[in-house]
Length: 193
Image (cartoon, rainbow, N blue to C red; front, side, top):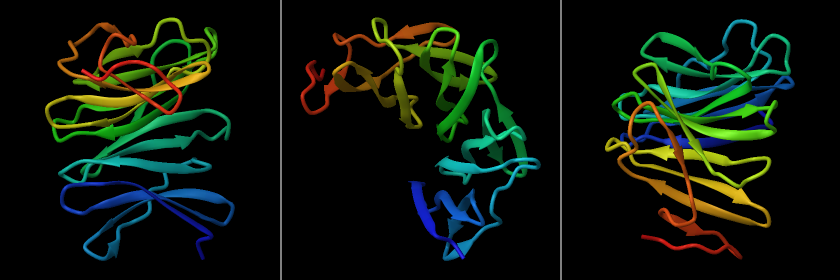
């Protein structure tokens, strides 16, 4: 049986996704109309987590590659599974949400720069979401709506901030700054526009 169950997202139709622990591994799942759909277990994966689902029941998340150390993001649109890895020096890639236009957001770790960057993947093209002046973790885009608005969080020690990006252009690097739409976390500073 399962010793841990985590729901990570729900679609407008009430489709739930998340992951559960069993037999020493985490397994992604999708629950729809009172039924557990086939657990998601990519071939050779040591563990996986389903983090997002859209209106159509397409899901995204991440899984451990066969070495058990490196993680890749994934999308499952219908029956088609696609691995998502940020090109270049990324070690781990995590897909966190998908909208009905199939725009995918998430984050990746760039260990050569000791930093985590957010991304939006649209039509096969990555847009980087960066927070200049941060060291270490940038944070993560965690939600995207069908208009393409992206919400997430990032940190600048010792504070954490939330952000909302609207009208993000394609194929660029977008820098999140405190003067942008920023919602401060407890103890943080910034403004909400």
